[in-house]
Amino acid sequence: MKKKNNEKILFLSIFIIIIISFIPEIGIRIDEGYYFFGFPAQWFVYYGKYQYSFEILGFLFNIVIFYSLFLLLNKISRKFSSNKK
Image 1: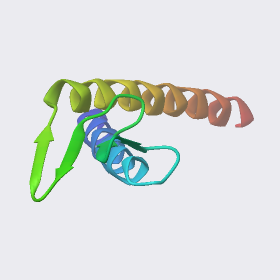
Image 2: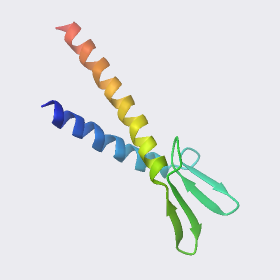
Image 3: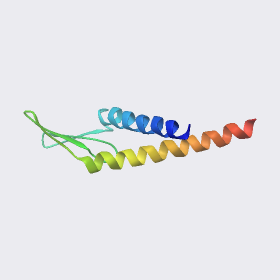
Image 4: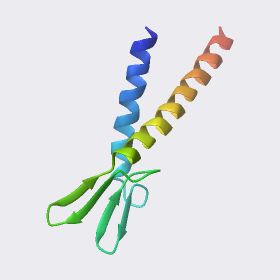
């Protein structure tokens, strides 16, 4: 059961990373006509005219950050829910 829960947290982390990356003022930064996507680390850059780059280390860093955050929130919520019973 724990493995399935970790897979859900991983999927949620990746989903949230993609969603946040395309929100203006949070995940998109425009510098000299180039579009940088990602929060907290950029992981995708669009240069224009179908030129882009994918930065795997930025994407992996974001996964680790969000996965850790959701794992921590999950443990905290379990602790509070077990105290109520």
